[in-house]
Length: 266
Ligand SMILES: Nc1ncnc2c1ncn2[C@@H]1O[C@H](COP(=O)(O)OP(=O)(O)OP(=O)(O)O)[C@@H](O)[C@H]1O
Image (cartoon, rainbow, N blue to C red; front, top):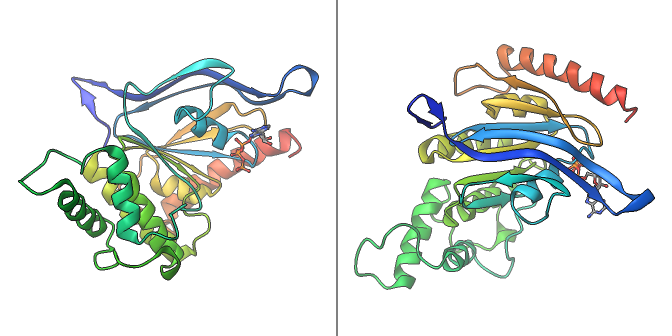
């Protein structure tokens, strides 16, 4: 749900003419070339592009893990969370332990203290709540290796919520999952996104997934990454990945993507 102030949308992320070169001189590699993009608060934007077009580089810059060579990114003080293809949970900690650690590094249990509980008891209660949100109630005592890939990604979503992220950057988070689990997680992510008014930038190679989830699909060119075209997705939610409407817009975007990949001989 895009958040508006009066009749204008409120930007959550403003990317202005961001270029990124790795290395210097003749050996320099231009990964991003003057990428500009504004994402509204509460918007879900899918970013699509061929392999190596700089999608991960762009997310690292937005997360302030890397700096642009030129240009700027403004997240207006929002808390930015990152989620990767691999959930990167601590294997020696239980599910509860992984979430509680995220709450501890946030320095509080999330939200205002609601009663006289100790910080530890508050973290426990908050962890239990978050596990319910991702439909993992009762799994808090398990260790990551005891969970399926889909369940581990749900823990990663709960951890991102524990960090109270306003903006969630997702780098192919469901790419390693089977189609059925992916469908389920699409539904859950969409529910959590709309309930919590999150802003999401979702990187994927999968065109249908991009259309299934996005308010907008932003197509990046092959290296160097540039914004080639943006496709609004005017389809009612919830959508189904295998619906005719999703397939038809995905086919149009795939044609454009092929053209772009062909142009660069990738
Ligand atoms: N630290 C680095 N040093 C040098 N080159 C890098 C570095 N990180 C990325 N690159 C190069 O920058 C380009 C963009 O990489 P990036 O990982 O951002 O692309 P991507 O679109 O996310 O790729 P993929 O879809 O394959 O994950 C690639 O050519 C990559 O080899």
